[in-house]
Amino acid sequence: MKTVSASEAKQRFAALIDAAAREPAVIFRQKRDVAVVLSIQE
Image 1 (cartoon, rainbow, N blue to C red):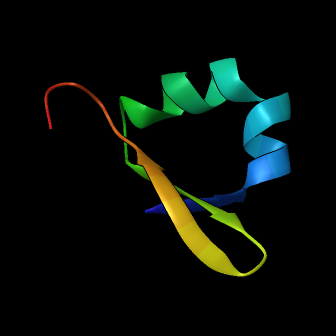
Image 2 (cartoon, one colour):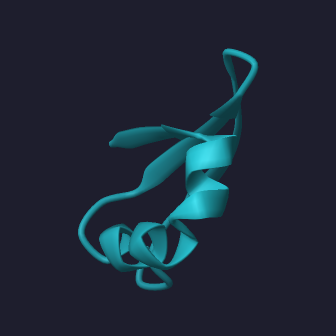
C-alpha cells in the first residue's frame, strides 16, 4: 500500500487516481492517516 502526504496527493491527484487501479494509497496529514484512495473494484 502506497503512502503519500496530503499536500503531495493534492499536487498529484490525477496520478494518485491512476495508481489506485494498481494498489490502494493512504493519505496522511501531520503524521496521521486521514484517507484512503482505492479502485472502485475493491
